[in-house]
Image (cartoon, rainbow, N blue to C red):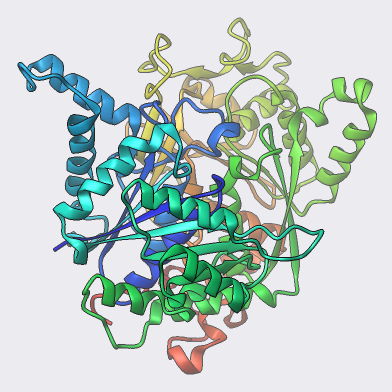
Length: 596
């Protein structure tokens, strides 16, 4: 029987349910179980595709082109799985499916209501999606972790709570458990940990028909025993069912924190799951990573030049990809967030202090990254940053819009086309170096981009990025764009040294650019950050970090192998028995759990 673990949240949203759900999945996977995950978002949007990053953070893109909540990115990174768009369930999707059924006449003669029709549709969706294989071996999952977004008590999440109240009886008690994540505030005036908000949220949850099996308490510092006992007494659980999830230096420590408090043992008993007694190499890898991240001495700074820098979740996957790469080369990462609009001359006139601060940050960084984005605001600032990176020979990576603007910058300053631009920002430009794609439908915004996993073919053997990928002929990466580099102008750029080393299967779309006579000047049309993993960093980001740390030439000379000092397994080689002098980064994958 499939085992379901529902993760709910109380007191405030953004409390860390996604990391906790991912961590629970990670420790269960380390026990040899196949785990999948579903994220429920109670908003009425069909998907996350039309959101501003300031609403819910970045839009994460899946292999099948699904534009989903960033928590699915956490699931993929922690569990090393590949999800589909139906793993993100929204109120909009549920109502759309029920209304479509009603129009077809499936409910003929019936009054269509929230209960039972909406609640039944939610349960059917969860049961069906939980069975979809998410790993390369194609095995049906045994455990499904379901995260319910928002906060218990919100009007919009009520149908979902009611659906799971019914669901717990349908699948039987031994196949369903509820983890409730709550906040333990600690007012600075007294320094005392307060339990009242947790008592109230658990009472509300129980009033709605769900009883938490584990209460995970988010707090700044470790939970005191007296506080634990008080929560146990007032929330109708044993003290060992109250789990402390205090702030930690690295999210890699959260699975270890839960494991230390017996979460895995509790869940295997509560859900009657087969427990594996073999050593858990996967959790050993997490311990290695968290220990390494704590004692890194060398620093590397990357300037992140974007327009949504006020909110860190706007570039969650980009920052994670940089962290994965920095950890792989044993450097402590410093991300310098720069609002691209502050690099523009208009800011110099209006707010000169912001202008000079932004340029000081940019000039002092070891590498420059321009991520994807939409809209004209801040694009000139990004072009200034790219121009500086190109002329000063600073390592540069442009992703999606970042690559398109690198082409615009080169056209303006090297080819002499002063008005070169993207038709997204200047439809009347005489030199449209970036144009909208033929299949783009300007009438509708949602789901009309070139989305999902697409193949990029390397056109040359001496490409730096090709070597970083392991000298492969092609790569499959995820895309999300409406505009593309104008293929008709390709020859003008290549004559001057900007080479299009990667193209799509038809040879019509420019996917990868590289600049001659530069330490690392790379642009990619796809989003490599979406497939970066903690133990398998994304090659374009790894290249940027290596170049920023001055290690790229040596890495390429060695055939893209890290020195023994830089590999994950060296620190614990006597325990894991897997360290060889030149461990290739391609071998540092999550260990297979089936044949351990």
